[in-house]
Image 1 (tube, one colour):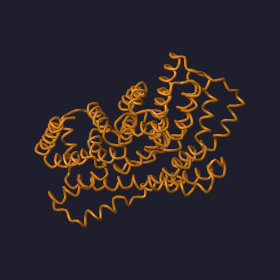
Image 2 (cartoon, rainbow, N blue to C red; image 1 turned 90 degrees about the vertical axis):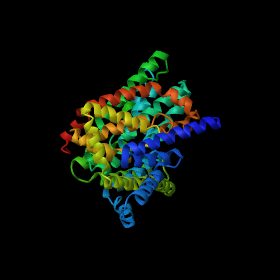
Image 3 (cartoon, rainbow, N blue to C red; image 1 turned 30 degrees about the vertical axis):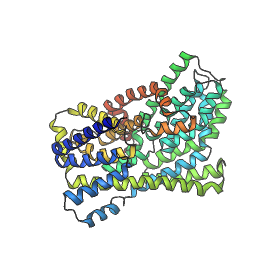
Length: 451
């Protein structure tokens, strides 16, 4: 890019940010500051913190003590403990041989269909997502096994990568999910209800992704596997049942009131450790410190983002921004359908520049009050946001699943962007269904007495 063109871009962006400040008042200044900092390449978490500090020191009279107190009290919530515990459980499951047994079980069920190994990869991702709660962990655990096997069987690498990238996103929609915990903390919504609310949408998306895969595989004549006998299927199920039992523990414990979702996360971590080390024995005991260190590192990163986002939420609440935004949205008389459409567009755009945790922490406190005043259920709204985050994980420039799959497949991001398109379009159709069919999300938590 020439100097003249770069200068023109800078002038244009500066003019937009200044216009945002003048037109939007305090709301405009806050978001102009945030956008300006993000455009410099500063990580979102640091940009959030700097926005708060700059605004408070220059434009308000909030005592420094109040900011410091909010830093500690904002993350002093029992529910936040679920995040590092689910990360730890996911890492134990990834290293403990759970994924390969789930793949073997899924292959025994549908490996003889057109594109059988690809379909087995999607089903295995769905099963792993039921017990994991992390999209990246799902892509790593399943993709690192299934993708080389697909290439060996004669599938194009591009096809296999497209399947794994999108199926891996099920990790944040099915039962336990770190983005759901973050949304629940941001909006004071029931974590247990959110966990169960994602089950039926997750099953529907699994079916839709399988359908797209089957159609493409049949059209292109991709390989099929030998049909497994019922004895082989039973043997594969027995081998994978220890991992699948974690689903029963999570659902049963929460719905029966035996433990809270945070305690369920602790149970998941302990159970995952036991089956990885002492049942499947795929993870040696001496590797435990390494897994703990990796989990602590990822947890610290997420908690740092949450801390800065808590400060940002404090700023917005102090300046009455969520209520002002809700009043502005309601004044436009969009109605439920229009507001949900507007929210989807906003979240899809945000997915181009931010990762899911940051989007939820910034957007949920702003959009949630307007959704409630329009009569939209908070749990349904949370699942819709989750579905948007899934789409964001699968497209550039910050789609985490793309980068993970790139590391596994050794393909460029541009190649993977093209490869993922058929399944990404399927996910957009799914997003419309989830948005305008609240019963899909709400029936199960209501039936289980969590709403």
